[in-house]
Length: 407
Image (cartoon, rainbow, N blue to C red; front, side, top):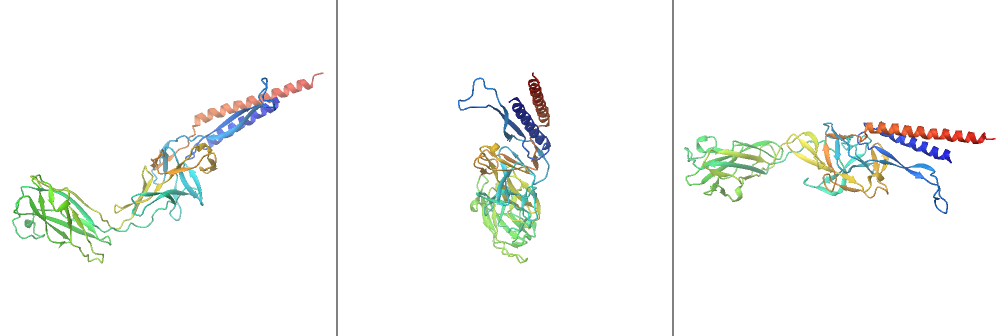
């Protein structure tokens, strides 16, 4: 009996040493979660139950439990490196099977898919048609764009300004865009784009009339009039009252580049007239030329953007994170991967920074949770346990020899 008890102790200490050795071996493994050996005592029972005088039968290993605590997020500066700050696992597609990981050291394969080192593809929520939201019910493999960003034709020009209330009529009565004496102020030229991404210059000229609080604006594209002049009227308080909502529709402009007709509206809302100098506060337009891919970025919410040289940002997807009721019930597959099991419960997948899921820290990796000092102490303790149980075997052997040698 004593031999079996001591042998169970030796086996338990050996298992503890193996778990500790595995932890120490993975001290630098990205996203690794240290494990803990868990034991239970043994008792021999009969059909009558346990006797009050029953002596324990030793110990057994009941579980090797991974400890899913948060590791330190270490910056790498690499755009495809991601770390999770909080709960959740990256959701991956391994040849059609769903697997999970905390290791965010991703790369791209020959087809542009974002994968882990073993080729499992990162799963994201697909963007909707206009790219303003994501389909939470549809997971897809994240694939980076390798094509250029196509040009976008300008449809709206936003201009806000302050005109001087004390301005006088120009000295030259007939407006001529080439004669600065025939107008008071101008926007100085705003770059707009046709359907081929070719740039053009849109300019608005402001001419004070003889009527109080009244101006006329002349709109030109590439030196050609884009419609008749529009009258601007301001209230006694200096607010723009006409045209309604500050909207002006310019006449269509036909570029000589072979592009389609350029139809634009001018938004002057927010413009004012005060007793001060002319001030052009804001000029924006919604078009752009073709662009080259500059970089891939990931937000805290897990939205992956392709950013182009023309200022266009295209959302490629939103990283999907998955949690479980019992993460310790996950089945370890090696290579920093886990799969669900009956013990883990049903997976719940959602977007980062929502429903108790963690945030994504781009350009970082989650370090191993192994505390080397703690593991070395565990190793010494397990070693002492092994030695003590071995000594018990020797003691049992000596007792047996003594009994055998009795005369």
